[in-house]
Length: 158
Ligand SMILES: [Zn+2]
Image (tube, rainbow, N blue to C red; front, side):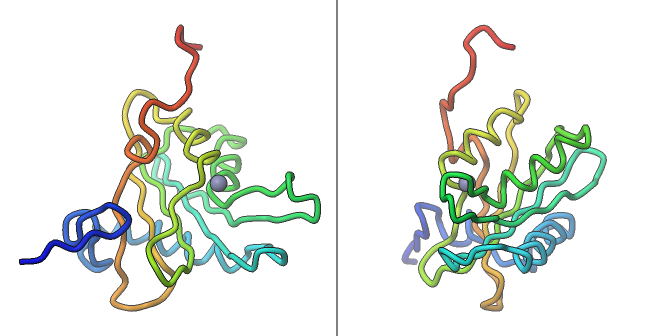
């Protein structure tokens, strides 16, 4: 059998059908899909949605928000994270990112990988990258630390 790799992940191992995933995972992917509809992206026309589940089960979602002063743009992942953190929730247990690219999946940018890695709290956070359409939906299953091994942290802790 030929092994198919997508973004470095093996199909049917790291890339799975949406329907095969746990309902709690499906739920955050759908929340990210919904949040994507609010994306403000007149410059790139590249809409992204993200969702984070916290340990108490709450889902925080966000979209990318661009600005004419490009440096002030914020990604969907960080929008979702700052919503949660500003409400006192930072014990993240799962993350989903949804965007549409014909070839491959959209994973968090380097800034967001670093941002999320601050909150892995000694464990890791599974991350699911999906597209908003194209049924049967395929999902790239990875994690924050797989995407950013050896990210920056203060060597002596906080
Ligand atoms: Zn980002």
